[in-house]
Length: 378
Figure 1 (tube, rainbow, N blue to C red):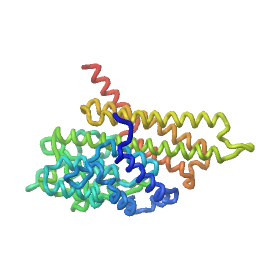
Figure 2 (figure 1 turned 90 degrees about the vertical axis):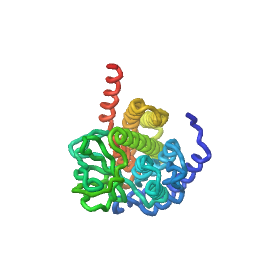
Figure 3 (figure 1 turned 45 degrees about the horizontal axis):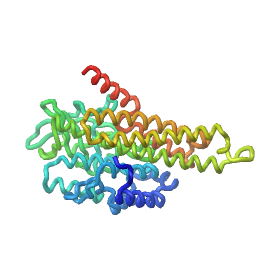
């Protein structure tokens, strides 16, 4: 892996740094929680104008044809700015899954819509009573109905659903295999309960009652559906880990500046050795997280088993590093570090939320242990 930025990646970094500086100050971040649906349309439009939404979309569909490495470069900057726009749901997950559709006008229109910001996707996969479903059989059912299907079931904690125009719904087909369906968000039979998350993002619980879709709404089925879902979730996990790394780096910068300015006993508190040790631990944890992110990225296109193991390993370390950095950042600021008026509290909330996306530390520890047990048994 080449760790040097390409010309396009450097342009991405420069444009992202400027946008973050202009649009993601503390007051903007606090205001995010008041936006209905969690989507700041002004920022989303700028994402599209800068080409960020087109980044990993194929050139023939109106995209830039970039790779996951480019998405990671951008995502670290989005993490620094605490951006909660539905970039991962729409571009990383939606762009990857809709690319599996047959070549034609429908595929081109959907991918082109993502690239310009008009089409926003939310993955409706998790269900009540489970902790982080990977690609198993769903309680949501897809029954043959006329020339298409009828979908019924419940989906919980669907990230970015309030602002989505389309849903990708996982369901069990009549032959007990997995199916993935593209469903318009405004389709008859969908009831939605939306809510804000602690970091200003938004999610929904969805209730599907005999939602009718055409046969061509089926994106993939059986083993192909399971593989596509796993690939999309793993790619999303890498992008969100990159956001976590960016948030950790920014949190370090905030804390380093604060302990130079805050004075106790007539001197900056940064001169106290105990606080220097805390900052050193935060620095090491952040660099370990970036290193393991690169490890996961290097395995992103590999065989499914090695990819899953690498990503679970990275999710473990990034999650524990995020806890070290965010909790230490609060400690360095004292009791008022948890208040809304200090940006370190927003890094704490965002990192806490990111740790839960697509499997928390415990989930990935179990997934990694299962992988290692299976390898030993083989």
